[in-house]
Amino acid sequence: MLNRTAISGSQAALAATVIIALLPLVLAGISQWAALGRMDAELGLRVGVTYAAVVLSFLGGARCGLAIHRRSLRDAPHECAAGVATILAAFLSLMLPALACICLQVAAFMLLGLWDILGAQRGYLPEWYGRLRNLVTPVAVLSLMAMLVRMAL
Image 1 (cartoon, one colour):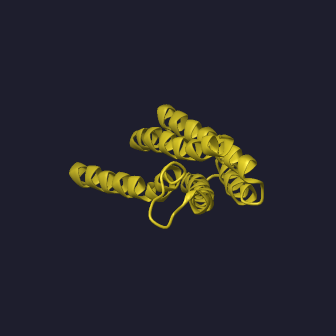
Image 2: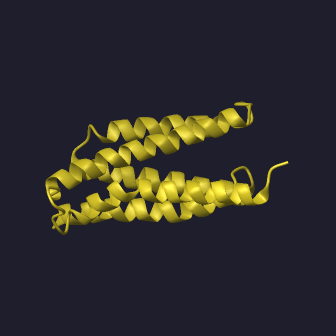
């Protein structure tokens, strides 16, 4: 049997890793309003949308992994489809003008975040994952919105 403390410790380590992994996106958002060394607003925008696409692809892969873990795509075809759609949306967003790119990425983060939070509430995702996504999604969306607002000014 697994030790409950070990599970909690690994969840905390994962949460810390995910939060640290958001730093490039947060810094890209901040760079729109204040120069961060060599990262000016233009570089920050490129870094931000590219990194957001990488994070979205990772989250899409996690959705596909969930479907595989459940071992039956007929029970969860939407999970794999959502994962693939997220990866494609992230990739395609990089081919759009900056405004459309950010809008697509914000929508993808919000939809996938909502789906993950609801999945945790319904019991097919771990509860701690839903809580983590409830923290991560707003940080990612606010970082992208900082870029969007700056573009609008």
